[in-house]
Image 1: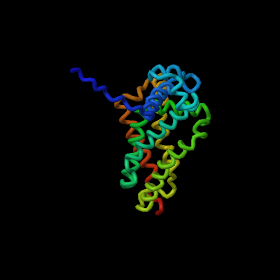
Image 2: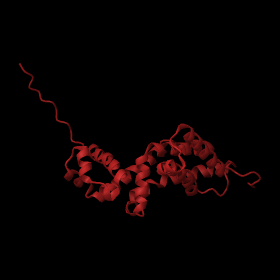
Image 3: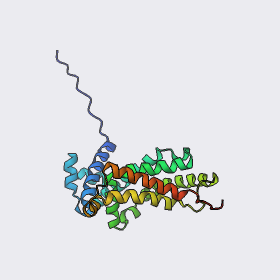
Image 4: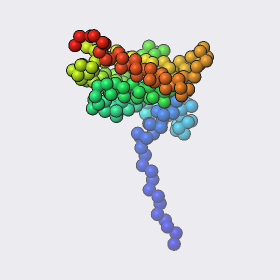
Length: 219
């Protein structure tokens, strides 16, 4: 007798559907920008009807804002996983610097999205309270680490968390965002193993040199 038992239908999962859309949209927006990206292409790459994208995100601009939120959430979540506040101050700063260098090189879409949003003068980030909230913890963590470093007498008294964040992020961002122009002008491959390792160590040395007390500086 044939088995008439039917397989249980797959449970519809809205969160998985939204994540699939966001992954496809991240690639599309990072390659073509907000104005050049096409929702039709995103729909085709996910195998979903375009109306489903509008159902979840409201508009192309809404989808773009959600992509930005996801991009910032990913890097901030990865930073939280480092448990920096559990490390000695110098080790924590070194770890964050190395992590940022590796993360931004491995996530070119994040670099492109941030660059694209800057061409829009930060308009969509300014409208997103979630993105603003997502980025507070890294500054708070740096504040905590810097405070411990000062108390231990190893950090300069004038180090600011925001300034340190900018110092670390700027070089990591620049070497990825400008890799093609640097290659064209200076004939240097920023991803070549020898250049990559040299630059990573250079950044660590620069950051640690900045935060630590100068010779002869009073306590």
